[in-house]
Image 1 (cartoon, rainbow over the protein chains, first blue to last red):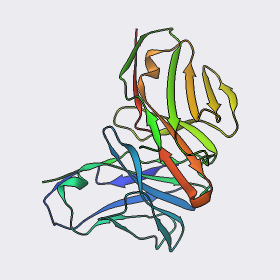
Image 2: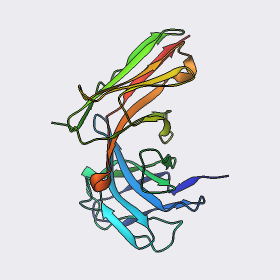
Image 3: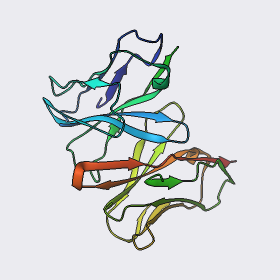
Length: 115
Length: 111
């Protein structure tokens, strides 16, 4: 089954404790992206990757890191999480970076709480 | 000022009603316009995309774009309880590969 998977689905952590949220897609998509979703603010893009070893900042990259060493994986790293990073996170992939007409396939989401 | 404004709702309608969901955007450089549907505890899924001003129809769904007013709409005919979800508009420009989502409108269709 074609899908985007994220792990973990739920995570409660404390301020400053490094964490990684994994994202993997099995559709051989070139483009992958991370979003956070907050009430009243909608989806905001954190980072995106047009292909392996190519990553770019989105609208809200501060406090996050990403890497794209393999085509299928795009982990999101929070080196020192803070409470304002409490949010619902989505990973997405698309056949290409032309995300207007190429559908982005979203993962199921990771709900992160930072105490 | 937000680049995309969308009324968060919730919008509650009876089954069979025509639903109108709307967004406005501020930058005329946005070229592509999309609607995503998001069910509770799920990721968004693309419903429709349009490029030019005018209407695009897909079954019970019609997307409308008015570039002169920077206004986009999604109409749902004969709404069903299964249409209950959050609907997000999104706009995209090729320059800078910029994609911006609206905050989403919660729709509830009552049977």
